[in-house]
Length: 441
Image 1 (cartoon, rainbow, N blue to C red):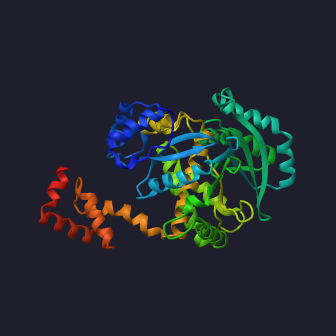
Image 2: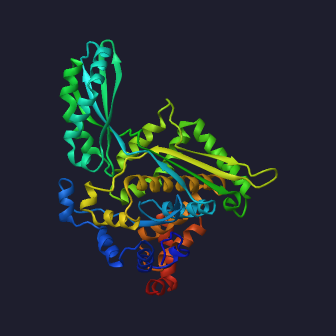
Image 3: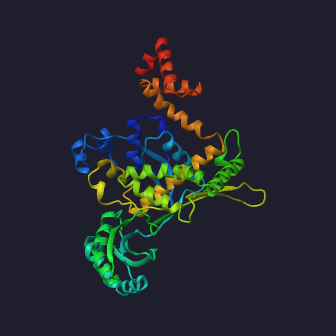
């Protein structure tokens, strides 16, 4: 089968059938999928080498987002997430976006910032001048600390000096900008900071303080946009033009109010984080950078905005979405070396470089945001979300096999999606004799 992310009816088939379909369209082996994911994909003995005081492993669902097309290329996108509706919502929104041509994405070079703090600076501007005069020496010291990265085409690219603190507490921060290629770059950048710190302090006639990367990687941003025809956004109760108005209103609300912007961005990170986790990357770093970037102008703001695009006099409009955020991801090193599920995730994506992976993750984030604001503008967020949540509640009540869907349907219909309601529904099915037959089916 040709590589595609369009797999109609995917949610209706069994887990084994889904594995076979994904193996076909991504070029992976079904046995590899099974080996990498059974039992959470990580043995306790291996986990013991990851972190300290290990007792075992903690598994989360590994699903795939479908319908994702980025810059004309299809992706079946691995997602690891515990929240119901996230994968389904992203896939559904990606299908709408696909009808408008898919996502367009562009990614900055993989530049990370190595910070060196200098304290007790008596002459800050003289110190800055002396440091910048020796820029080439500093870059050479930095490159000498990461010869493997330099051999792969990366390395130190620039030196910047920032003035912070007060007259009573004069302080400089020197940024060494490092091209990390396909690595996330934390260890590399930290090594650079350690290598150049003493020389910078000597040049500044100051004391060296902290030496570490910054997770506000605003030189390593990804920008994503999409266009969605009004017809794709329509519901049974609302036409597409009305839905666009509702989504625009939701966007403006987030742009004006940091309380709303926070939840708006949480919806974006639902998609981004799920891809980041699935591919063995540091989702805390991505979150920290994204939220710091959202507050860069002094008020916390939305990372994605939505606008109407007119299509001529009297013609139907379209919805245009844009997302920009910093994204430091890696496709080499770290967890990827030892976690089979992370390696599988990258193989399913076609072996992307760090920039391509960042673009895909951001696109899933924009799709997740579209799904959320469309739901808010139409039926409300609870309708679809709670319908999927009902299955988890049914399982918690003790339902198994085919009984799960029946109990979930009963509590959704009753609009009482609670553990107590699920137990009552399960008791009713058991008393009527339907429970046993459904479990056998």
